[in-house]
Image 1: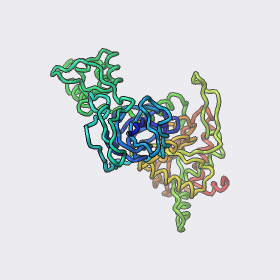
Image 2 (image 1 turned 90 degrees about the horizontal axis):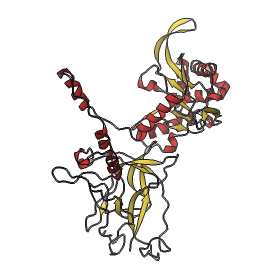
Image 3 (image 1 turned 60 degrees about the vertical axis):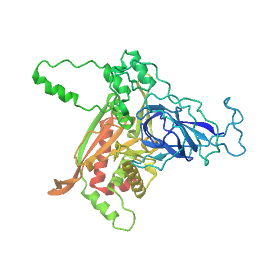
Image 4 (image 1 turned 120 degrees about the vertical axis):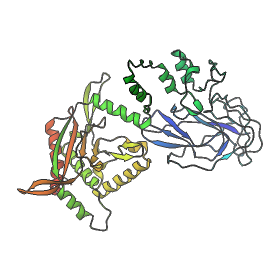
Length: 468
């Protein structure tokens, strides 16, 4: 007799407490292999595919697309065939007959459009959890010979979806398209008639956002015909919910803006000599050194001179700053454009890497950011951030500090400009540097000293030799 195993959302690391279901990669009744990805979820850090440590027949899916699941919440149940010589539980729960769970191998990275050839088990149809108004899965599940010999019907120990409570039916006598207990509770607590709510989910499924929209007060009628186009335009506006990475970024930037007393200083620098030095470094057959790697090397050297900038502020329960934590290691974050938007990968122990090693690691993380394959660990733990927004063709910016760090260096585009060089007007490759710092960790003298050091290294790269 097959044993029904429940697989829960695992701890994805880095203090993450939950994840949002992006899409299901399997269906109820499908035969899956051990460690086959079953669902794609989006955390506050990255989108990942979660593999199931069991092989067998999927008997239930838990959670709808767009639903937030907590770590430890059920994901799927799988009917697995017991290994030869393994005792089978008698249905009374637990005991010596249960099989030993197999450890989870690891998480694959979500790749858009990638699918797999699916095998489904024949026999009675089994409804999946996201189906509207479906009952708990209790129908017999036929297991193919490759999984187990003919067996008696199997019912999972936990129902994936509770039977919806009776609600008022629409005028046509149909069933209200709502399945989430959270949605029903929200409607019940606020007196919302679900029969009068139009669902925005698949097949008209009523989502939480639909109930929240129904709770908003109706807009007043326009006082004149001139206001009608404005009202019509507002009705056509699209409401895009903040989820996953975008919600985390919004919360982090808001906290940074509200909590950190930030100040910004600027300086223009002549980067002609730095570009010439890079061209010399890249003449040989060795791996090429990127401009970003040289900027990273300059930042690391600057932090060695001004270690108070490689820090974070400790707060008490009341939000009052009580101490400064100066980090000995430089974990250098850098802004990179990925398929999910702007992300900040982190180069661990950047102070221990050579310029070539920095270039290689920056290149690897940049490719991973574009592919959406960065792990949560590669997106957290930074102590200082370098933002090269010049790649977007802009000259200047006022960076917002990446909380809880204390500073961020911004680099604009390098472009030909008139410049006084050796007392003569000449055309030079000029860039603007902007430096935002937490005024709690240092004063303007320290910030200005760091920025001036960076500018001097761009204009006279030989200055770096004193720091290496």
